[in-house]
Amino acid sequence: MFKKLNHSFQISKWTRSDSKFQIFKQQGQTLVELVIVLAVVGLVVTGVVSIAAISVRNARFSRDQATAARYTQEASEWIRQERNSGWANFYCRAGRTYCMDSLYWNITNPCTSVQVVPNTIFTRTATLTSLDANSVQVDIVVSWTDARGAHQSRMSTILTSWTGQ
Image (cartoon, rainbow, N blue to C red):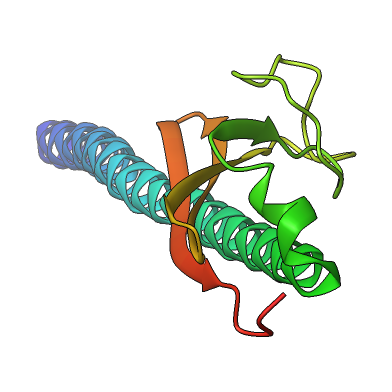
């Protein structure tokens, strides 16, 4: 009977040892699963952050492009008012390129790095070319540089002496 108990004790001991092995095996599987989950989460987060960064960069470029178009239009309207104030005075400005950091006639070509539209990254130039005695072609260029490189917004128009001055 003593042997039987001993034998039964041995079986019980073997079962305990086997269950410990099962626990360690399960913990190893859990660790591998955790590493896989962390890798997947890392990839997802990296993808989301990349998409967000691209979206911000594209939004900034679109904003800059719209601002440049607005500065181009602003210069065009100012030059049109100058034409309306007197054709003879306006016509004598043809044949030059003007750096228009502010809306006045500033003969500097090319614009220097400090001649930007105030509090911005944009430079603005206007080139007036005489086509004949009654018409002047105006080419306006607004330029800026960002992380993606150099960009421009251009506008061209022909102004005529429509008042007969």
